[in-house]
Length: 93
Length: 281
Figure 1 (cartoon, rainbow over the protein chains, first blue to last red):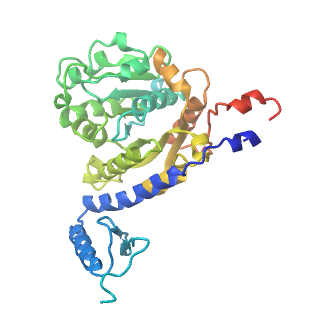
Figure 2 (cartoon, chains in turn purple, yellow; figure 1 turned 120 degrees about the vertical axis):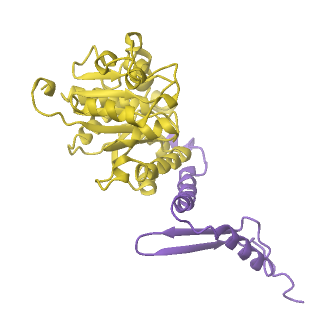
Figure 3 (spheres, each protein chain N blue to C red; figure 1 turned 60 degrees about the vertical axis):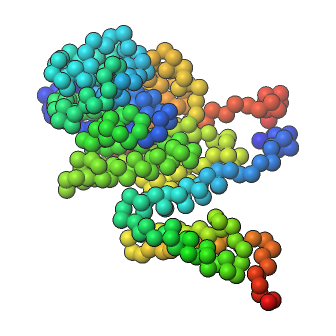
């Protein structure tokens, strides 16, 4: 790549990484769906959201649950995304 | 080199070219792989399973020679020998076109099995060009397969559909239902664009393989040669040398069990500055 080419390179986000991450998350869900998947995941997600909301204001899609099953072990991964300036609700009161 | 002349038992290996998603290059790949196998001297037949949307005949350049088709044979209206079209370029290559007027319900499991069994007696490789989707036509194309080539673009919907198809190969095939070895599935990554990968705009080979977790059969670069070849009805492996053609030849060699180093061909179009200063760069 020439020196000039570099200067004109658009400063865009590297979307390939996003594609990869989205697929990995999605397929972890879908592969479960085709085997005997526990279908309590959506309910668990709702319940968690409710509990967390008692203390922190989180978005509807702020809780993400991924279950991965492998031969030896399974794991349940829970990601909770907190808003940037989350003041605890009623903590002072 | 022609195995057909010898009296030995042909290999009789059934390979399905499938993907789930449409437009990723199944028919292009089926044509290129079949022609590549035939060039190596393997007696090869390629079957169009896309009933109602016949296209393999055009890609192979034999659309005006279709008299009887796969469905006629299944329904007993023609003999297999009458429906098989012998390629004009390679005497080891045959095409079994499908019907343009019927629909996929005309395919029956028993009918497909009978035709495949008859072909196994005579051919080394039987390439099944699957329709898109995961309905009846696609399921029957993969059901009797020994091997599967899952054609995938480095793009989210294609990878997702490939994953689904890999699931079906592992559960809804004859080999899956019996205690035989499972269908040997590989990924053929098509429309690969190294320039876009370098810019972080396209998932790379490792990304796709990590997600799908099956071995790689080959990497076909995005190439203008593919459209040119389809324009004139010539499989890209029989056209004048191109990056895509070379990549298909490598994939074909791997399909026959040869060890060929994986190389990434690319068709880099020079940028403005590279064109201006091309000689000094």
